[in-house]
Image 1: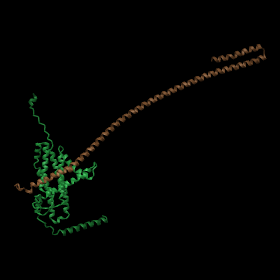
Image 2: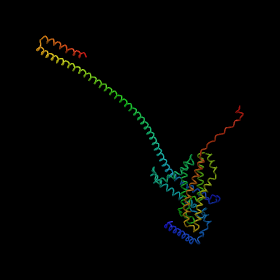
Image 3: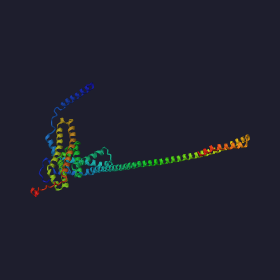
Image 4: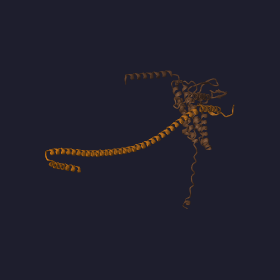
Length: 175
Length: 282
């Protein structure tokens, strides 16, 4: 088909330009649909995936930081609690120790008191037995005297001997 | 210098001398053109003698190259979509990394240059970048095609044709214009039209860069003596450099201008009228 257009230099041909254009439009559409769009979509999907991973990691990191701070707080309170319990235990132990000490002292005092009482009893018993022995001695001596001297002299001697023996024992009892 | 090194040095010098002598002998009488260079270069630019029939239309070989490149790219994309993308993992393998780098690079280019609007721009830059890069590398294959006249022609890069380059330059300008309109309405149109030379500069930069490579290659091939070793550098390395540089330049410029025109307009604060000093003193 001749359009009557004057000859263009350099063999420029509008029909061939349009043919080139048609060719390029087909190429553009094909490449866009078959290559550019799917590859770009995949790259976008991968980017979203890694962004999501990063966000998730940062969230987990923040949660871990929070948990760490919480545990550190708890650890600090546990330390304080342990210190308090230790002080209470020490106090209880001191009380118990004091109580045992008091009991031991009381027991020692009781033992001492008992020992004193027992010693006094034993002393009394010893004195009584001594007195009995003295009486026996005196009676035996008296018998001997009576047999050797007169009854009267012997009686006087007996009385004198009894008085002599009684005086020191009274002094000891008063002490 | 040890004995071993001396032996190596002597061998290297001998090989160089032998190669030079062989070159001098072989190149004797070879500096004859295989055809008219003017005609060859004119054909490379205008394609007047190598039109190909496409559904009854007479088109340049670059149009066929464009369709072949599109077919290759779409086939590759379909295979990737069906067999590779469903197996993508969060820790990518080498091929997945390559695909992600390609998509990410153009997306990043769009986002950094045009932070306000970049959804469509990223996709456009990806398609344009793939088309320019793979299209330029495509000429290395040298796929033969039969012209309408029955001759054989090797398919060039799609953008080595002025029509292909104009399409790419003007389309990039239209994309920039669309970004301006979407972001700023009429003001965006004004901003874009201010850069009225952009479609021409973009088109001809692309065409000139790719054509210059083609012409250099044609010149090299027109002399038989230059056909040894040199085409590897000219044909392969220059083409690879071309592909990367042109891809970067066009996508970068498009992203840059798109970002500039789609930047939201911020109204300047109105200047307060000066109050006469007499009024203040009262």
